[in-house]
Image (cartoon, rainbow, N blue to C red):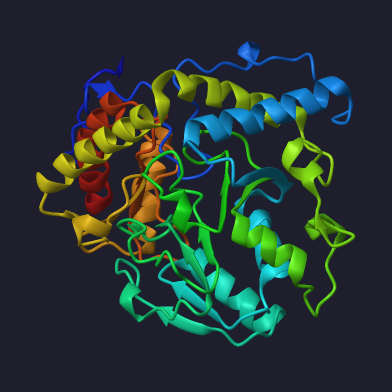
Length: 384
């Protein structure tokens, strides 16, 4: 933490004496890992073709690190694809949906985005099970003879599924998990997941633009046995001559990747490997617990997700008493101007509030130092 002079604000609120050392609380792109510096990134692959021997080696190494860290079984493929998590999930939807009826779960903006794609673009008329921001839909209402789309952790609502118990082992349809704020932060039962997507920019604190697509054996079977009725853009094509394009899952990306972004991801993954998946989860848990203590000590602050069992431990969404969008904008602006907290306003489609990233790349001491600054920003905004 860094010190700053304690000085009374002209409106009566007093600035805290200590700032978070790393005030990066954005929910994407998220804070870099502790100790990160651009000069520490390997650079031998830069300026080289991603199809060179070295380029393929580095891409495969990145895939191998993700597999090891996630404890992913050999039955599941991992591919690096374009378009961040959104591109990866849309790739899965466009290549595999249409073989069965579809159920889509929506309780925040990205889940609603998949509903929009299914209804307006693919025109497959899915069954939609919705819940308001802060709530989780009835998972017991899902018909698993359908393909099912869901977000593991709702980044914009702060609501997550509690575990994979709601997914039956004998399901007929495929499970599609948008897991971008969930991987590396929760235990995921990979036997229950047929398709998962994420991006490096979340729990790993990596750069954007690239997505990760994980396919279980049932998803591979779908790809090799089913051809969608609609045309597929080149960047979505995962099958060649009726067989999975295995090269995509061995470092031969569909389009040109940024090797700088890949090297940045490798740095984060090597840092994470030193902690192990359990260590990453423990850091997120500790950060979420520290933020819980801040909320519990303040009457004006609350959780958008009321149920702790389904409350996110990464993208934690908070309510602020009496706050509208303009008030939240003022609070966030005050914090940014002081260098005390960056990018903490809630998502634009969510109810007005704050959103604090508590993933593993954030230090708990910085969460703890944030509390007094929230007090100051709230008091100063109220007095304005």
